[in-house]
Length: 419
Image (cartoon, rainbow, N blue to C red; front, side):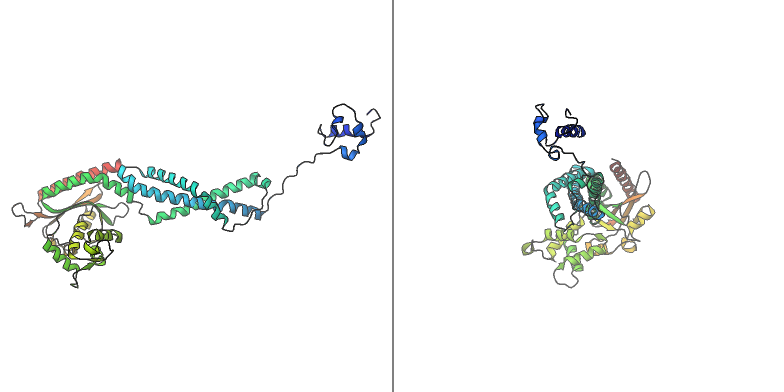
């Protein structure tokens, strides 16, 4: 400046003022006050440098955004599918086991299932990500700066959320193959079992009935009845042999599981193949034990029939025109002196069980509030107090007693449902 504003030193000062004090490439002697001789000897082009503003990254193309969204969504589909599948399967298993045993709610079982689901996500998260990479997803080719843009980050979040939702929906498909009411029925059975055992035990003794069964309407399928409690007297051996002959129509000396299943269908009983297989396997003896044989001999048949007739839970269809159907539809008591002469009685029952049904008393269970029929109690074959071998008709007193039992049972069912 002392030289009239000309020369290299002046350029240094002007560059310093122009750049706001940021000087790049100048010798330290220019800044410490020791002189500008060094600067005077340097060309202007090497003593000054201007900062160029950073240029924003180019906006991503539509194709790059689609590829980026796809890479964000696909792995999340796998995570969502695994999360919901594990939670549903484990939660349902816990609901049917620990839930029934300890009275846990379905939500509690689902919460435990979610724990297993989260652990599975941690254990197999890397596997799912690797599988997604092997699907041949296209590269997005976005730079780090482009991925940090707000619009791109929002797209990635939305795509991941959509992938999780889709995966969870796919995981829910397993619900279509599950009995969603099984756990609730099992919990109700456990709560009702003790009282119903006492009621029917007392009722059977008071009525002197050979068989007394409580049937409840299925809430999800009104065409079905399921039995929680049954008190039955097993036919004597001679009768069991006669029944076996009914099954063994070809006199082969044995019958098959298929023939037993066909007979149960005629009775209207709903028994799955796995349940029937389990009963047969448990009854088999000798070399056939545990061999998976489908052949049933007489001794095994007796055990099978004893198990089936006293199963803790059984389901039957409400046969139109039958006795249970008449009680459910009319809501009134049905009393029959001779079942063999009544067209509403299913004679296949006697043929395939060995019973000879004569007298029947069936009363409805009514909801205390709505008065709707929720079940039926059926008593069969009142035994004469004077002659245990003779069956007599049920009386008006028997009808009153059984209606009282039905009233108490319905009140307890209401209490269980409310609680």
